Length: 332
Image (tube, rainbow, N blue to C red; front, side, top):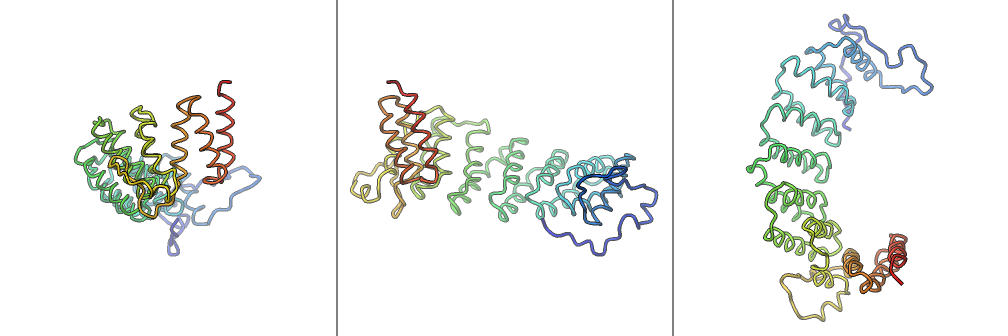
């Protein structure tokens, strides 16, 4: 949270224009066991805010009061909500409010309330296109901020305009060029391709499989890309075994792989110097074998054991659990 400079601010209790309002203390007529000792400026402002709420006042001076509180505590959801009600009641300029919200968003981009306020404003302003470049600006500050991505996806789904959707895949591809492990970009790609309700037929699936396998080849231990591969298959109800040949390239050592001379364009080989074997690939292939039932169980157990003992020891207990569950459930 950015610091708020209120050194020159006059307390509301000393402002003549607020003398008509009676402030309401948080602990009025009670003695709490563990009282919270707030900053004097925050206590002063919130005491007057409770007084405003008590009287139901919706006026321009309330906008000044709620802005003060928000700058002191951007997570004060009651101040945000009352501010919005006041904006509507006073017929204030929503365009001006969005300009102020732009500033607050940049400062408090990890605070949910500021993004919720943007949603309310955009719903009324009904002008979403300028929001896309603004969001990209915010992503330059924090490319994986959950609230930023969630807001962008709401914006796309709410307006569902082709001139907005068309910008998304180029954005994602640029972000993945910068960082192929950007899990937020991978999640957004899946949202754009498969969750928007558009066409995701065989050609789309083929293109996405080719795309994700190329990215896996660049960074075989990138779990985000392997999860994207699983997501495609799960979404289209395709068996994992369809990608077994590709996955097998990533469960062997680099030395063993280099001995292979056959090149399959549909199953790109790991990039030169890739760290192999890939734990994510071993897990994927084990799932393939497990799905085969009794005939593939021994192979799955062997792969899980390699993860537990060598390739993913930090999750050793989990892999041992998988082995126990699979072998106990297996028929005699």
